[in-house]
Length: 271
Image (cartoon, rainbow, N blue to C red; front, side):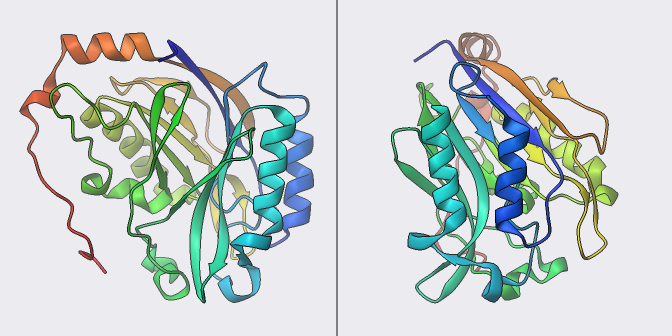
C-alpha cells in the first residue's frame, strides 16, 4: 500500500439541467490539474445537471451517457481518477449513480441507496442495493451519495481480525444550506466511528427550485479533525493528503474497532 493518497475536492456551482455547460464549466475550473497534482478528483452529486427530479428527461442510458463519457475522458486526459454522480437510465429504471472512472479506462459504479423522500427522489429513482468499495493506490474507499450519510448502519466499518473494510469514506452531495450543520456533523461522526478518513464534496449556489447550497466540503481525518474546511458558500478546489501510515498507527494505538458490535446487512431490508 502506498503511504499517501492525494484527493482534490471540487466545490462549485452547477448549471441547472445543462450537462454540456457543466462539462465545460468544470473543465475550465480544473484547468491543468492532473495526475502530477492529485490521485483523485471528486465532483459533487449530479454534477452534470444539479439535483434534478426530472429523471425521465435528464437521465441518460449508461452505455451512451455523454456525462459518463466526459468523466472517462477527463480521467484519461488528466491521468487520475475522476468521480461524481449522474442520473442514469438502465433497463427501464432510473438511478442516481456514482461513477468512478480511472485513467486506464476502467469504470466502477455505486447506485445511491437512500433516496431523499422529502424531494420525492424515491418516486423518481430506484434504490441501490449494494455497497461498493474501490481501491486506489492500495487505499480502500467506500462510495456513498448525499442522503446515505445519515444512515450509519449502511456505512458502518466492520473490522475483522484487524482487517478493515475501508480506509476512507467518500460522499458526494447536493446538501441544502438549511441543513449544513447535520452535514458537517455527520461527516466528522462517520470518520470517528469508522476510524477512517472521510471525503465529503458538496455544491454551492442556488438551483432552479430555489434551493441554496452552502458547500462545506471537507476532508476529515480518522479522529474527526478537518484537514480541508472552507467557509460556507465559497467555491474552491483544494487538494489534501490521506496519510495511510498515520491511519494504521492510530488504529493500532486506539483499537476501538475491537469492541464494535457485529452485524449483517440483510438484502432487501428497507425496500
